[in-house]
Image (cartoon, rainbow, N blue to C red; front, side, top):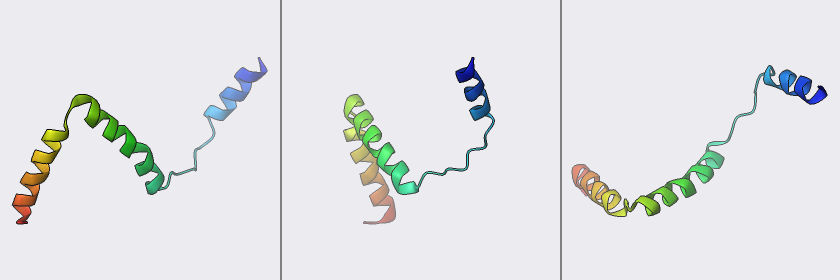
Length: 58
């Protein structure tokens, strides 16, 4: 019964920790690269990048 009581107390504590944006980026980038590789979206990414570069004028 004690672990349940501790878990119940933890649930009501306010979370004050925030994650640094660089840490969040380090977590997200590998996941994004993995998804791009798994679904074969490299071509679409390159096409969209070229389109945006053309709109900017480079």
